[in-house]
Image (cartoon, rainbow over all chains, first blue to last red; front, side, top):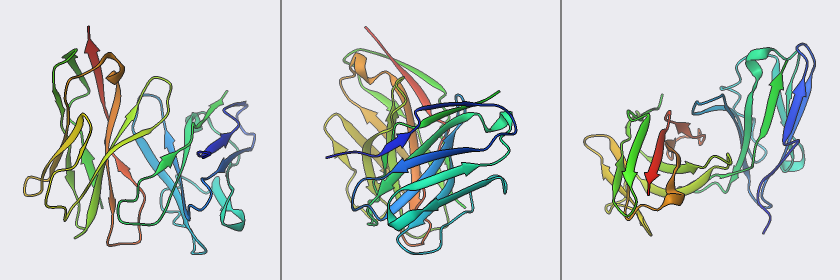
Length: 114
Length: 116
């Protein structure tokens, strides 16, 4: 079946512009996660959606970052007034909510802020 | 808070030999899961193996096994019979099972190079 998809695969923007990154999770997965991977670094948690519950936003680095998940499926991560330090690969993952919690990752969006 | 430590930034192994990638963790959660992911140069994150904190036996998946030592808080990945295609970045990660926070906390990774 189809895996997690993300768009765009690459995004180049100018400092100060807003960007939107999209994630389509695996059908039927109730949990959706956003992570950020800076060059040569591990993954940093950003935000987590679970069903209709309020999202866990504890990983968002600033109020310039926001995300929504419409209809329990597609999610959009928005970064306002982008800064150069926002340059990274943004990875989305989805999972069923069970104890082994295997998360399936999308291919990521590489964001470059000039 | 959870923390994952991978102390080996880079490792080399000869093809067909076994290699162990180290991972130690810290958590206050009574129930948790430990994961290993592989990230080749293409960038995709590939799930390898999972170990639950209450699992009595060490997890195995083909050539991958997880050496889980709960008292030492370690969850080392063992890859047997290394292949050239195993060259990649390997991440250890954990998540809470008992709590509502199911996000993964990742270590900094180990870059494995398999030599022909």
